Image 1: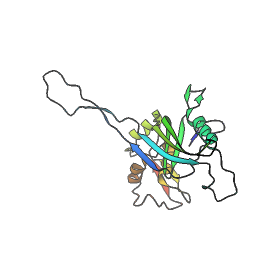
Image 2 (image 1 turned 90 degrees about the vertical axis):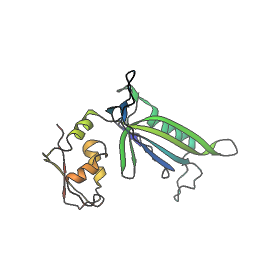
Image 3 (image 1 turned 60 degrees about the vertical axis):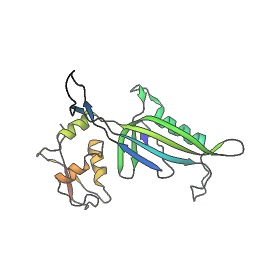
Length: 208
């Protein structure tokens, strides 16, 4: 996880998350006039998605096969909080983040975090902790414009596939979110978007 600074802060999870939950919602107006029966409701919008990660941080040294000193838990917690909670003076709010896990990449901001200390040494210093963090997707006006143009027949924007490229990552680089990779796969008639052939090109709807 990192933020957009001149020198970006970076927090790297030591282990894969214990749980990874993505929540989508749809907002309706279900107000009823007096005397009317219930209705399906009027669609309002689809809010940005929210997701949660629960992962362990460790300072016992069991997580490394190298002769590298374990980073104390208080320092790891300090880095996590500085990355996710520090107020950015330019935007007057906590940092915007980019969270990456596997092929999942999302520009977002922290909604809440909970740190549970689970192991201590004889002096009471924590040696292991579990962090449960919830984030909300940041959807800019550029992303909304891109979503509206995904059905456009004017596919003039192309990118060359390099060795090791994944479609979700390419889509993220274009739109700052990977949510539209299935639509891009359909537009390009990709039978297997998980294995892109280097040297081919991928068409993306233009963003004006």
